[in-house]
Length: 314
Image 1 (cartoon, one colour):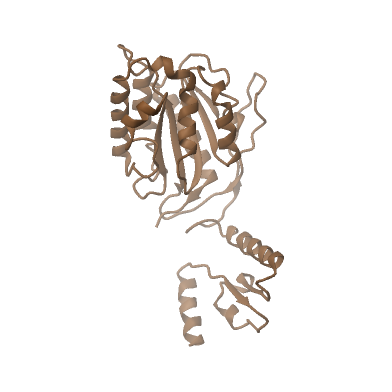
Image 2 (cartoon, rainbow, N blue to C red; image 1 turned 60 degrees about the vertical axis):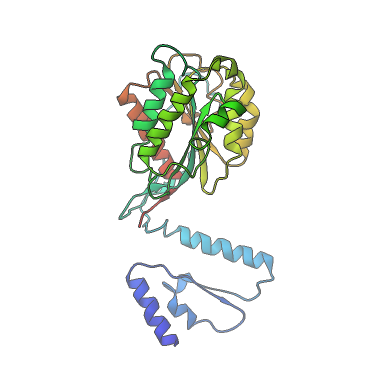
């Protein structure tokens, strides 16, 4: 039986599988080690009740697996995304964007995250073309168009999170927003974004809600069930209500959520740079219909997210 196991293990290894073996107890596990990829993937622990030993072993195996990168990936050189230097004094610490190991994938790599798209629709009921219109179009059609966002395979999960919101508005947009499980593909991202805009166009006095709008939206995002690494991409257009969101911003950051801020238009952006998790994650987009600039910022965001949580497809 052991010979069959060794032969089957060798077949798996020949097909590119990595095999880690762990012997438990005080036996001689040299035969078990023949199943492992090589001797460095063969481990043993004598006492599972020794918490320190178990913790050390878990960390050792995790580090070993990290060395072979991610799913279906092979390690190459370590890279770090270059950040820009602002001419004005930064309000957040210098860049701490983590380096990562690049992947070579048959399919992908893809962004494996829960991403909340928090965006300002406070001008939706204006009688003339406005930022809410151009933001909706950009989000639905361009910003997340790169195949690295693998929505169809549920590798990347997106949730629309417009603001301002209150309980009344949330009742109308329930089922198309604030849920990482309801956007199965890009077509539905476009449809749900357009439908959300249409609903917002029917709400009166949106400007009266702006003081609490961002806070309410981020609070709702914080309550969502996330199963993957979490990022908030905030598309803001004015500074109303930004200080009211300080507490929920810190709550999100403290639980490990990354916040990327893209300020759209030529309004007052005061306070938004400090919302971003890193000074380099604050970007200015003067015109949401400027496809070239949108593409540049979208490429930056995609590359950053791929550095944080890449995964290969199957």
